[in-house]
Image (cartoon, rainbow, N blue to C red):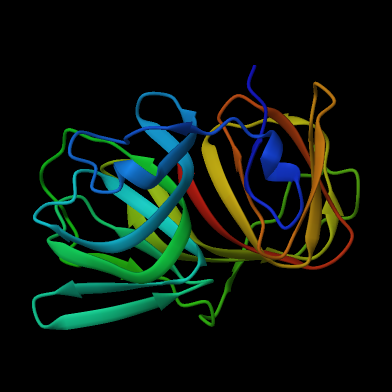
Length: 237
């Protein structure tokens, strides 16, 4: 059984992650700076370091990017969009876009390769609004809670049913639950508060604002938070 994986941290947690240089897909425009920490053949996660400019005729896969350092400029048709550190976006497969970083930029990514050529979304990019309102979402069941039931909120900003992906913003009051088996891959980037995550093999890590980790499908994990926590998330079924 695999464990959860630290992709980006403010201390030395990420130094224990095994990153391997590689490509997400054929004609990956960022293969030179891509470091992969998880790869099941379809879903991959890791980091990218990039400087320069890439004119991309057709983006070869679906990718969610959370910018950690620097800034990126995306240009397509007559539109020009600048994403700074802390910004989050999705690049849809098939996107015709130029990406530029005048100085070194780094992002955490979650990607999905697919044979589907059609793109049901007209948008080249999906930009996440960190200030968007959140909506009440179901709490956790009493059977898995160690603490009182939390109040949870969610805002799905990107959904692709055809490739079984959803992503957005989520927050919750403090809670603790028992170990449960992860049913989907989930990337989590903490934007407020802090959480301790552990697995049934005894691995444990404490994550705070600006840190990112991946919980692959099949991991038996436990969540414990004593403060209000907010995160950017992406889930792949």
